[in-house]
Length: 103
Image (cartoon, rainbow, N blue to C red; front, side):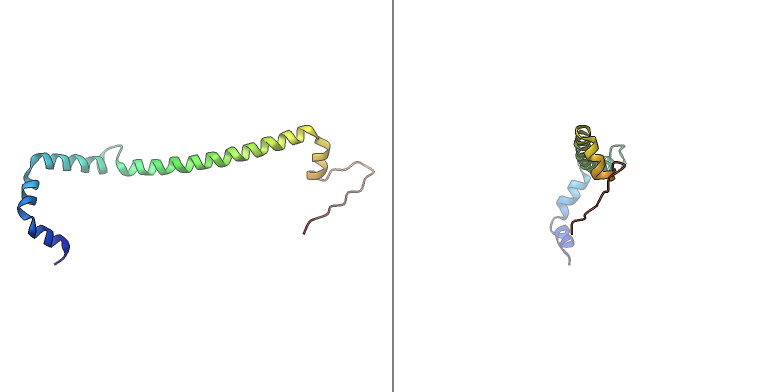
């Protein structure tokens, strides 16, 4: 016999009394309704909570990107010529530009 059958055999009378109790039945019905059928059922709440956590992680990532772009904007504002030369390889008309790559 498995464990559930043994448990049922040992406590058959208590289980029958519990199942016949109307407060137990109403409570069980309410619990089933809240878990599966209510508009704010538990499964939906768990899914919404996981969505909120994912969105908060995305928010933190985007805030870091915004801060990096803001710092880059401040760097551009301070010295536009140097930034254009380093990032876009711009040069004056009579200049030669050599690009060295680190390996």
